[in-house]
Length: 393
Image (cartoon, rainbow, N blue to C red):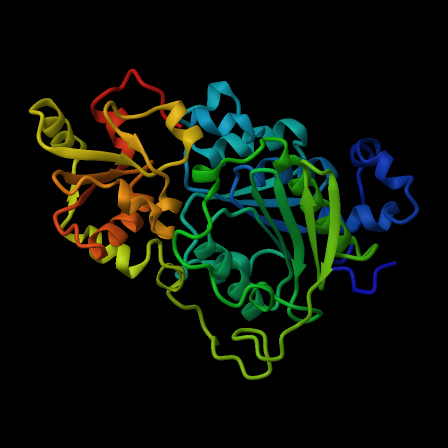
């Protein structure tokens, strides 16, 4: 048995249909009737129905978790289908929450599904989380991760965390009453622009299944009170090397939210705390952003510009703007890019969406190219408005 108490009291009984459905659980001594009744009584909230939320929701439903909540405000996009297996081709353009609910019902009609079609933020998180026993965090940005963590600490609720990038995954269980919280592990968010998102850096689709299923395994253990949950341990998975390793995570007595003298005693402004882009980048972009239509005009009239794409080479191969030279953002941050700039021309920078080009623009301005600009919306806006026949990614 676990060294932690089961999160949920058992339901009164299982119907004949439920006994048939969950028979493979019931014959495991550690789960048995008592464990399955706890799952039936459990209320689990999944934050996100994307890469991690897809396998998590499907397996939580299959396992017989009685009530599943889904927080999701997005719609299904074609690029989601490479990993978000809860959605299908016919769901493109539909609400992810509704699409996820339909798939859950198809797997297990006995599950009660609650949809929360809203963006999770400081105004609604406490009220939402209070309705559930356990939170499964499948979010992909730092602002929401810190929000989820702080709300769980303030409500004294456990949550199962996971994160994915390219071939690497991480998972842990944060429960401040019995162990560390996410801030004990990562007290500060990384500087803006330092850690690429999956949209920038990519993710191996099947990695979501590996980490999502670990999250559900942990959820079942917590709900039923079995095994050793990942409290105080960070599990690190490398799909290319096929290695799993765990690292001990200690509770930080000086943690800002769960420590002995917390400084965060209520929710804060998480967007500001994590900063979408650095202040330098925001300052640089303020009066030096052009639209893709403006860029098209300059290219058509042979304006004296040097157009530079600051994305990575494999992104450039997918799609690029005619006439752009590739110099990845890293070369600007290291300084090597500056000698490639043509002082006789106006420098125009672009990336995928405008975040990385703003970071590079700050460097270029600081080097004295005061009239340099960057393209708002990047190559995505270019494809959308100028060359719609080209692929987006």
